[in-house]
Length: 79
Image 1 (cartoon, helix red, strand yellow):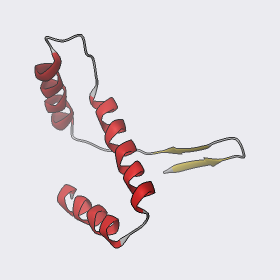
Image 2: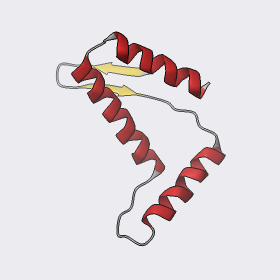
Image 3: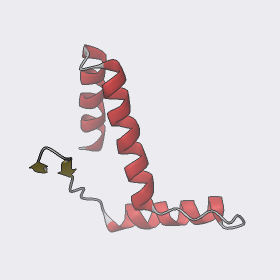
Image 4: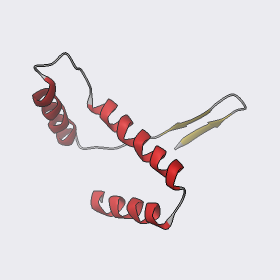
């Protein structure tokens, strides 16, 4: 993560590595789900939504043991 800290705003950059095949599968899934509608969303936007939801959950739950266990279980599944 790359952090920039100022009085006006705080920005964090997250680099995510994914296999190209996983990204392509996600794009196909999104196409299949939304091809008949005027709704356009990318794999990148889905990832952003998931991260923002995750951070909102941490804000509301705090750094509880439940959240810590959830993070560890997700990391283990992705490894």
